[in-house]
Amino acid sequence: MHYLMDRYTVSARRACRVVQTTRSSVYYTSRHALLTSLRQRMREFAQTRVRHGYRRLRVLMQREGWPVGTERFYRVYTEEGLALRRKRPWRHVTAVYREQRRAATAYNDIWRMNFVADQLADGRRFRARTVIDMFARECLAIDIGHGLGGTMSPPRVSDSDSNAVCRNVSTATTARSSSVRRWTSGRTRTA
Image 1 (cartoon, rainbow, N blue to C red):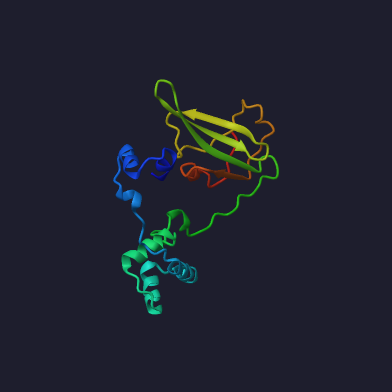
Image 2: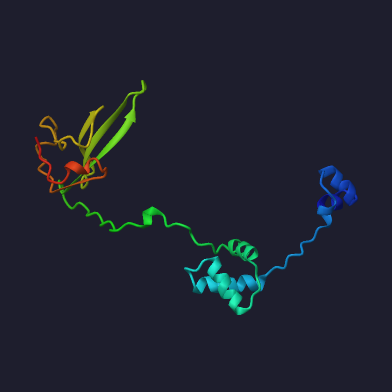
């Protein structure tokens, strides 16, 4: 509003008529106190007592002599960004931390299996199970099918594969999918 009044040198009444607002909005001044000392003390309490919510902090501040109502205290508490999270995310509540994956040190040291799913142009879905040697970063086998599931037998490197001659049994097999883990509890064997 003040921009229109200064730029076009018009009165407040005329500027308000153009923007279609009331004139009282031009003359309004907030009567709210800034509450800087309250905000500062609230921050100090929240930093020392991390687990306390706004209700407990309000009780502690009332004991110090701060006469603040519940609604005002909660409004200032949230404006300062001090609100506690209501619920811990489930991803942080793991009982056992995951172990670091061991890096492959030689050929056939670690094979990794994974499922990949896609859809054809006519709408039919298919899955591909891949077996990768993690040291050489090369694909040893790919099984493709419509009903490929985790209850199938472990993938085998076929005799027709050119790498089958130089490939031995992997010492460890890891799976990234939960359905694959059902049959990776032992060693995999070549055909």
